[in-house]
Image 1 (cartoon, rainbow, N blue to C red):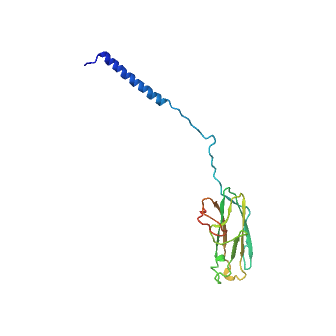
Image 2: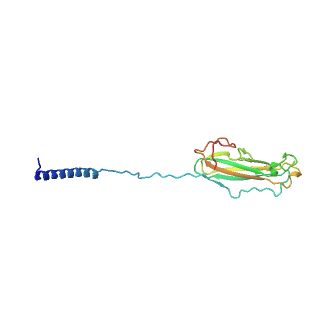
Image 3: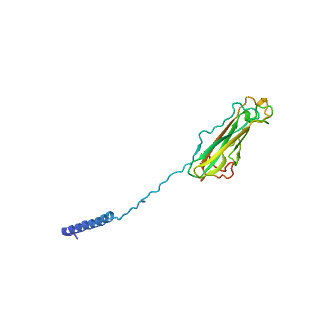
Length: 194
């Protein structure tokens, strides 16, 4: 059974029509998409906080050019917390020199230079690192530190021509997610001060 040419042409035309119909359906599905977008009309803006301190200009420690047994004095330093996030404020102190540690004396340091550092509430050690002072969140918060010193009248000739140095460093660091501090004059637990 052979197929006539007319049947072949009709069959071929039907095949072409079928392919064309399928192509039209596919094209219609491919290009006929509904879509939509939405955008936040006010984007979320982030601003980081600040942790800062300032030292009062003009704070100086006036000590006589030559300290002698029986001399006493004090120096006051003013520091202000000026940040805008809750922060721990800490104090590091350093005291060095033969006049302070008594290493050059004949009395084993019994009459060495006496130094105390206070903020009016707490007395801090003379050579300490990162002692907690307070948690500040108000801007500004003022802190006043006083260094009291004296050379006892019992200091003998072995204390002549000796020197000492006292240094104060006030630090502030964010308190959120940074350990805990609770007792003024003590080290904080797990706090990173840098």
